[in-house]
Amino acid sequence: MPQNNLNLCPECGNGNLISDNARGEIVCNVCGLVLTQKLIDSGPEWRAFSSEEANRKARVGAPTTLTLHDKGLSTMIGWKNKDAFGKSISPKMKAEVYRLRKWHVRTRTNKSIDRNLAYAMNELDRFSSQLSVSRELKESAAHIYRKMAHKNLIRGRSIEAMLIASIYLSCRLNNIPKTLDDFTEFALVDKKKIARCYRLILSELKVNIQVSSPINFIPRFCAELNLSGRTQNRAAELLKLAKKYHLTAGKAPTGLAGAALYVAAIQEGERRTQKEISLAAGVTEATIRNRYKEMVNHLRFDLKP
Image 1 (cartoon, rainbow, N blue to C red):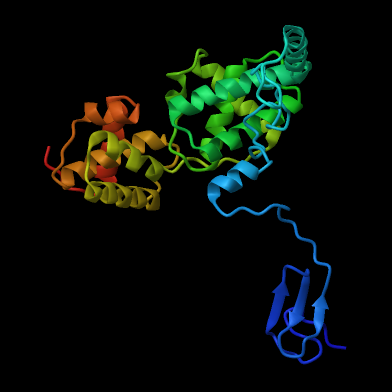
Image 2: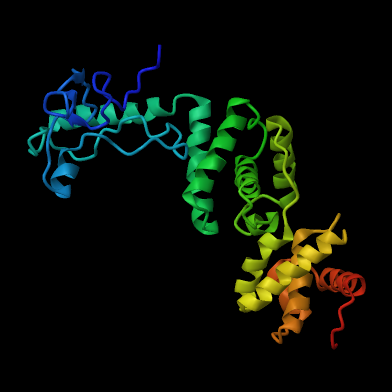
């Protein structure tokens, strides 16, 4: 037997079906056959005729998020000492509500992991604001940190170092051009601790991270050095050539990006000094010089000194 097509009437084979929301039925417009009845309406039971009225009648809260220690699911007792009618409550009721508020706050973080997550998520907000991290990256970093917390691997380690390592890993997974030096500027822990926590996360979560492409750093460095789009495109072409001739293996991506920009800026008539590029790339002038010499010697560029 042929299978029934839900988009066609089984009686006449017509595809012109009408959905009657008032009756909860789907009816064929040609022969009048009722295909489905008693449909469930998943929408609200109220009607609204403006966006303000819809917002006023809505009874749902904010969506769940991993960036809150309770994922935004718990409730809060408001700090307004008023009843449902907007009238002030009696002094005796104020004392009772104050006691309820106090115990409500205590029970929300009665476990050690809840207290840990509450502190870590507040720090995540701070880092995200200082580093201009997007909401998606923030959620990804919170997800990584929660995995490590549930594996009980935060104990004995710096919460801040583990949190920065989680943000750095989420940046690497999403090809965001960030280095560990970008995070140490706002951190109270040293780079070695962050790198140690980063390696721990990689081994525990079994994440396979590819080496960052130096091309990802080109737009960022161009913006800091105020270089044109022609120079940016030329630097990307140089890096592709360098990869083709195996000049990028084992080299730091920031140093390669800086050297490519140095060569491209000279070729496009927007010369920048090695010191300017080294400050933008976060590497030494010697690194820029060495990568530059390798590119010029292997790719046979004729550049004026």
